[in-house]
Amino acid sequence: MKDRLRRLLFDLMLIPGLSGYEGRVRRHLANALADLGFASRSDRLGNLIATLEGDADAPSVMLFAHMDQLGFVVRKIEPDGFVRVERLGGVPEKALPSQPVLFCLGEGRDRPGLIANKSHHATSPEEKYRVVPYAELYIDTGLDNAEAVLACGIDIGTPVVYAPKVVDLAGDRVAGTAIDDRAGCAVLVEVARALRKVKRRPTTHIVFSVQEEFNLRGAITAAQMLAPDIAIQLDIMLATDTPDLGQRGDVRLGEGPAMSLYSFHGRGTLNGTIPHPALVALFEDTAHQEDMTLQRSAHIGLLTDSSYVQLVNAGVASIDFGFPTRYTHSSLEVCDLNDLVGLTGLLIKSIQRINADFSLDRDDFIL
Ligand SMILES: [Zn+2]
Image (cartoon, rainbow, N blue to C red; front, side, top):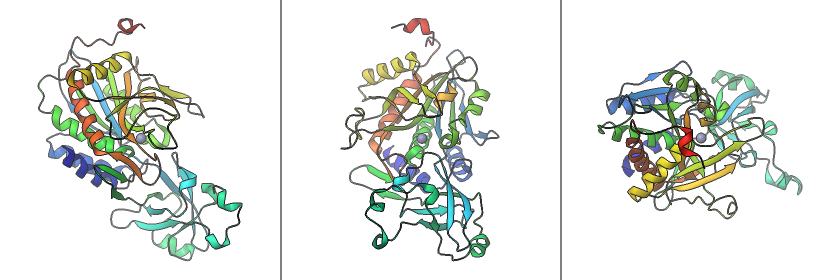
């Protein structure tokens, strides 16, 4: 399983898919599903959906991960050919200078670029410690006038992503572009593969969602259409085992999957997910009985599309579930393949336990 996860994750990390431009990722995943014998369909927003029919008396499940990644959109092309961009998603501005990027023009026609960093020998002492806002940055394509840039297909509105890259670190640790959330997508395919052979299972909708990094709301249309009782969202969990994050939590890379007990984002978004207690109990009990590891995460600042999915119809019992990740939203994020294996295993075991007796009644969970 680890080798399959590694292969699919590496393939997915090398495919560009800015929010709103998930097409190439969707096609790759639809092919992966087809290889497993699944028919898949898309809604108008671009969500990719495959349904495994199961026990009609059990609550239905939507298991989802987002296909899109953060990046940029071309805002202006300067007369001398330098390209200015608008950010799309939570781009860390202090980690942008000197990053290679890719202008997404179509398969085989993409063009490379480099986010410029002011020549060090001309940088004043004050400038050395200042973060340059993205609006002041510019991208060098190697072309030296606007006409040439336009002629190669780069125009206002062109999607731009970090240059896709994968670095194999020691052990089973991987650094790569958009581990958020291609690793979640890879796990989803593995879970679908295993559930295929399971006789007793709830109806499970596998959803690869769109535009999570843009406005967190792409998965809403899939949830509205599928009307699931339960939604389990797979995404990064902030690893807090680096020297700069020790006080933030207790999630360690390589020590297994994690569930979120609380997430919130205040700046404009004003949303978050407090998981349904039945799902917290489900994952805790399964991990305990199967002797699997499960970490816990609770903090403000990280938000996923489950925040919106939980509010569909009469409410969807929701939880954020995932794998520890370091250096989130940077051009290279780091995860551990063993955590993906653990996450896959725990999901497979847990979902099978959702049967006709599985209660989502809040009155059964009063603290
Ligand atoms: Zn994500």
